[in-house]
Length: 266
Image (tube, rainbow, N blue to C red; front, side, top):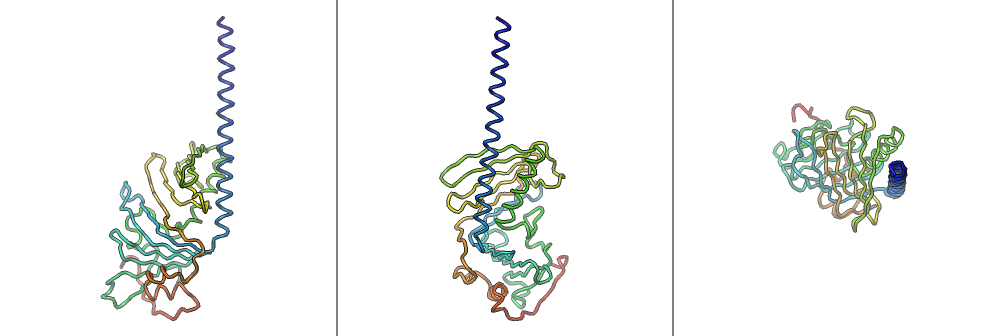
């Protein structure tokens, strides 16, 4: 009788293990399919704009939640206008490869309004405030999507990934963790990522990142997204400071006297 029980126990363990492995493979296949669909969708996007909500780690805890009007154009041109928080009114324009890598910044009342637009290093405290490791090049849907897809591939190669997929009316919800990875290990920017891929446009529109202590390091969300809105969208034109708007549109750009300030003087 004991031998029969052992046989049943071994068979049950084998079935459970096979089922679990099958579910893991199925989950990974679903994640691969979601990422492939999203990357293909993003390839068809030249620009987008919407309201971007950002909350990042600062001083060991999540900082102030920021509401930002964001406009992005490929290959990498980004405009941000803070709509609330302590940064309300701040406007930032950055285009990779232009202005010596500096940020074009408008801040209401700066220098008594004598310098509507100034150029600052990317380490400017006005932008970095509330973010532990802010980098303008990390911004945008495409950056997250490509970095996340690369991290998933590395996790698969290293055998350090666990994924779970669910779905609701908003879209597909991906939860991917990377057990066995380390904070200082190249290729892993988070221990766990929860991302919502929109049901209509298939792009990641909400992302929550957690570190190796399971503490949130960043929560990001895009709302009211308009894809391929074009450069001269009326909402953008209305919100953007006049000279920043001209800088965004190269064909109408006029020379602007550059006032360069080192970040230490900001």
